[in-house]
Length: 251
Figure 1 (cartoon, rainbow, N blue to C red):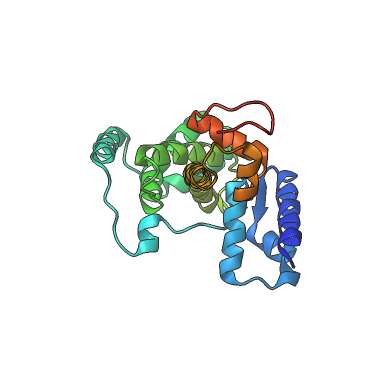
Figure 2: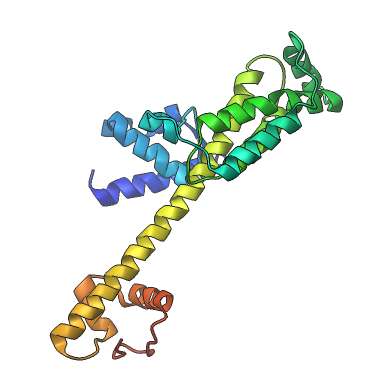
């Protein structure tokens, strides 16, 4: 498959997930690409692409940054302070009794509100541990915990009984945290690319100006950089450069 065909197939996969409330399973993705015989690394890239498109990939969990690098990452002073205070706040909740969690699942399924509140309390520490495991230095630890708590509440809302309830709640916590990490890293990646484009444009303007001995026009820059004129104009706006409205404008 060439690049265009692959991108088209990726778009089809995203549409398929959108029709399933922005969710898809690992097995569904593998079946979708079964004829392409993708490697494990290529499949992970597909999963990461889906996450960047705000699609939840059921069963797929990226390694935390510390786990991936094989070394323990240290938290910032602000994160350490947040974690200390947050853990102190959790001490107000009654300790879990043997079998308590399992007994609450059925009650929650029947709409018992006190049981739901108690189940949330029991899982708050699990959220902290998962957030620490999935910690990424580009996302504040407190934000990971809070997003995990949102996933916790969503998971508990969907509990229908004891069977598989714990695993489902944990997966919802993980998926919410992972989605937040993916959103932050994707934004940073886009910002980095834009900075690189601004730098490249600046260098191109300097080079062409020196070569031609005069200011250069947008269409000349477009040819030199292999970009369309509209994209160059957008980048120029970010740099604060003044431009005319037509092709013959110079910068």
